[in-house]
Length: 314
Image (tube, rainbow, N blue to C red; front, side):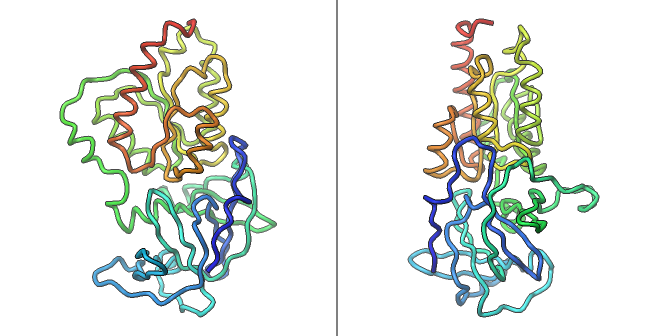
């Protein structure tokens, strides 16, 4: 059992870089953001669970916590691959969940820029969003970076954003304050958009990554009516081209855009990521399933923004 040495691999804040842990399944290279990895373990005996999803291998208890094991080989190939003694479990932590993924080998860690990660062409996934966050070239190999949140959401939909949290709020007033959202997952972008519209927000501009959001903000930053065009920014962290930390840094370092409240809404929020976000000036940081909490935070930050708006020197 090998604990991940976090101190040595955490990146400086806002550099737009990512560290990818590479692993192999059936000879193919895949990757996961190191920030999601809690530890690497030798594969252990797993207790099967009745009526579970076919990709759920079962549960095991390495210490005092039950951990669900997902057979990543089955999920990716739809075929049961032979389990071997040298298989490994990548134990992950995101969205306040601990889940283990069975892989065949770990091939090392590469540090690259988000600019070097490209979104797969939709022709590869029949026009639908696939399970890849992006494709990167690491040490001469093409590595498919997997969307682990999407994998878990498909297997256990109750673990992702729940519109019922917003519906339980009842009738809410219409809010025309313009919001900018940077989120690369089409699935989550739609879920967030639907939830915010149900919460009464009518002016939402969606962008597929931090770079697209930043390009838009740069085009309007000198407009005299800037604060009529954007009142608040919501950003994911993991995105091709430009991540959310880099976007937050660029916004908060800008004399005019820096007045805008920024909410980091990501599956990666933990104590260390929170310190990073705070150092960059993020106004709030929330774990991605907490859509109800996000609505309350938006309400509070918009009220504060409106109160202070006259002091921004429009």
